[in-house]
Length: 365
View 1 (cartoon, rainbow, N blue to C red):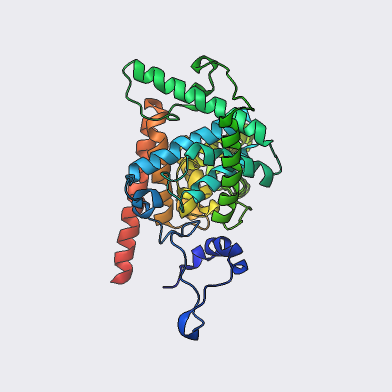
View 2 (view 1 turned 90 degrees about the vertical axis):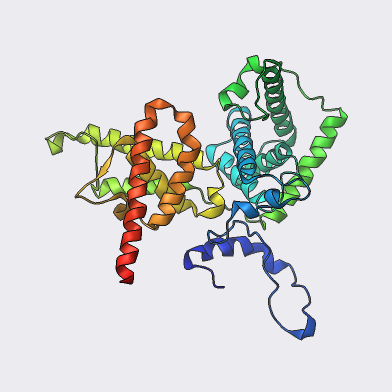
């Protein structure tokens, strides 16, 4: 069938490298195009189904969708920690490495490739594409140290009767703590180092082919900053407790804009740990992050408008889907302090869906 209009750009990006490959011969001389590979990367919203990801369909040892999701999250935490704290990569390079990682495992199974080795190759490649290259030796040494700490932490947990089966399931700050292990380095003359070096260089090439050499990655950050600035310049937002004197609200307004942008950035960072980049455009994710940020901080649209009225280029179904996937990730981590804010957001999302369904019925009749 025909792809929805909004997915065209994503599909085109995926197919950027395809014309370089000659199509297979078609029997009978027909000029029909070859069937598309499944799943596409990035996977179109209409076809994305975590029940059909390679790791879930892998034989003879399939993962559950929940286990696949957890493997993504844990490795994304590893990429974030290694990229930002160990390798000192810029935020955008870490985000690009994460997108490479998600796209790779939309076409390959976790059972086929060690996720930490893939993470190293993604960091190496993203450093180059975002003009912050790091030497292969440094990437291997720092990632090896971080993984070793995680393994030691897991062993300690198990010896103390813990039940965590994940090597990188701990928080980034815990992974980075020097107390989590010694400072032993990998020996550059060892067989392990030679094998790792060979694997990472091979995986870098496999990643390039998997993503169709599409190295220019859009991230939500620039879209959400533009959105916040646009809403502020048009005076479409108001702080939780506005003072009566509108002309004297400069400082309060500046604080509101800063809080809205910072919270949205945090939600965008969280979104990187999910498969959202396979399902939606960076701009759609950015709009949902601005919505979540505004609701979380109690910032309201002016003039009785709704957040959906203010956000461009996103429909109610996509806004709800993105928001719920981010909430599922962050809500358990934020603790009780944020519980009432998250409940209010979920209530608002429920009302959006109900209102949308009611409107659809009205239009049918």
